[in-house]
Length: 67
Length: 246
Image (cartoon, rainbow over all chains, first blue to last red; front, side, top):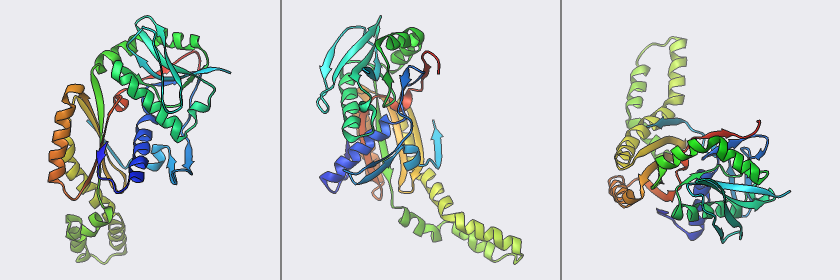
């Protein structure tokens, strides 16, 4: 990951958020009574002092322009 | 109850295993013919949204990407038993094969561009919208017109931001998309997150993509750029599968 960071803590916070932004609610979705999935959830990361929720809630899309 | 946590569908029917380093999960391949499901034994806690679980999930995906073509599965997916995995491949194997073929040798790069929304909206006075508002003020004094002008004034900062975001994003997203097999973008997910882009590339073109982004970064010194990846193709896999009944 490349960018402009002020502190190492900021870098770690951004890393976790970037991972969350990619893995949560993206990829192959498998449904069925034999499948147990994590639904969209809100979560407070007390240790990181961040409030993190499902991206749809944290980052409400005001505009989407697919190619 | 012992379940299986599912990370990805991969293009290998060969058995393997490795231990992921963050949570020490043993990852193995649940095979069915020429396809496999990368899984680990689970008791359900692996799906909890904790930093270590999220990072462990990502660490597994990074290792899988080094060896296989992968279809990343949504975080937190648990299979109740091995036969469910076999059934999944039996029912959807053709679709998985086609997607794996399409995405073979390709990775995703993420670009986020941040701006200072307060600075952007302070430039409202110089914008076309501001000039429109001034012209409107010279016009009618009817109550209806005053109401419309007031509503326009309230929405002007957001309209200005969106207008400028479209303009700037066009200058950034299009050249990056030209270096990519496929690309998607989203504007103003948050007020300061002007552009979120995901770009599907061949592995060989990642270097050229980085160079292009560096060139663009120099052209837009007032913006902050975050480049991430390579990722599995999260934004470019859109499959929903039903196993058993819903």
